Amino acid sequence: MDIGAVDHVEFYVGDAQQSAFYLCTAFGFRICGQAGPENGQPHHRSLLLRQGGIEVVLTSALSPAHPAAAYVAQHGDGVANIAFEVTDAAKAFELAVERGATPVEQPAVHSKDGTEVVTASVLGFGDVAHRFVQRSGDREQFLPGVMDIIAPDPDEGEHLLSTVDHAAICLPAGQLRPTVAFYEKVFGFSQIFEEFIEVGTQAMDSKVVQSPSGKVTFTLIEPVADREPGQIDNFLARHGGAGVQHLALLCDDIVGTVQTLENRGVKFLQTPGSYYDQLQERFASMNLQVEDLRRTNVLIDEDHWGQVFQIFTQSQHVRKTYFWEVIDRHGARTFGSGNIKALYEAVAREKATS
Image (cartoon, rainbow, N blue to C red; front, side):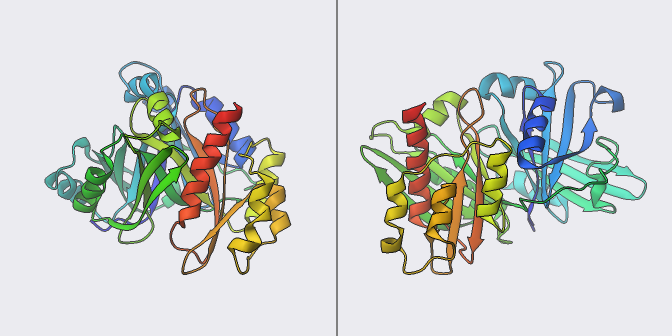
C-alpha cells in the first residue's frame, strides 16, 4: 500500500472560521486555502491551514446533505479524516476494500494547470475515515479544482510546530484488539508498543500501531470494563463513541514553544510540583533543565533510544473532548510507560478541578 506520512487531517466543526481564528492566533497556523459556494461547493465550507509540514482542513456543513452536519451533531467538533500519502491512491483503495475496509469515497482525480491529485477514502475506526492522497505537480495546490489557494502571506510566520507525531484514539471496551488487527490486515501497520495502565481504581489498555514508513503512528486506548469509569470512558460518553482524543504535534524546542503558545493564550494542563521534585531520582541525566520543565509544566520520559518531552493542552471544546499535545523527541522512538500514565493522570486532574 506504500503509506508515507500523514498528508493532512480534516476536522468537522460547527464554525470553520471560528476554529481557524483560534488555531491561527494561538498556534501560529496560516489560512492558505478555502472551498465553499463561491467555487462550486454548495454544501460545505472548508479552510486549509498550514504550519511547517502540518496541513489541517476545517470543514463546516452548510446543509444537512454534507456529512459534517451529522458528525458535529453526534460528536461536536472533532477529527473526521486522517489522510495518508500514497503513491497510488486507486490501488491503495482497492487493496483496503479487498482486505475488509468499508469504502467511503471512490477514487477521484482532481487536476488543474499540470497538477494532479487522486483521492479515495475508506472507513478506519468508529466513523473516522482515512483518505488516500496521491500527488503530482505543485504540492502547494493541495486539491486543484476544489480548494482555492489564497496568495501566500508575505510574512510566512514562525514554524513552532513541524509535523503530526501521532494520534491518540479512544475506543470502547473490547475494541482494542480487533482495531489493532484491522490496521495490521488492511493498512499493513505493525504493533510497536503496548501498555496496561492502572491509576487508583481505574485502568486502561493501550497499544501503538505504526505504518511501515514509521511516519503514521496511532496510540489506541480502551478502558478496562470491570474498573471504575475514568477519563477514557468520559471521552467516549461525551464524544458519542470512538474518536481521536488528541493529535501530537512535533516541535524542536518544547520549552520555547510552550512559552510562546502560553503568551498567545493556549492553556496547558498543570503538573504538581512533586512531579519535578522526583525527576532526578527517576532519571540519571536529563537533556533539559528541571527548572525549565517545572516552569512550563512539561513532562519527561525515556526509552532505549533517548528522551521525550511532552505537554497537553486543556480542551477548548464545549464537550471537553478533543485537545492537543506538543511533543519534543530527543532520540526517543516510542512511548515510555510514564508518558501514557502521565496523560491519564493529567486529564484526571483537569476533570477534578473543572
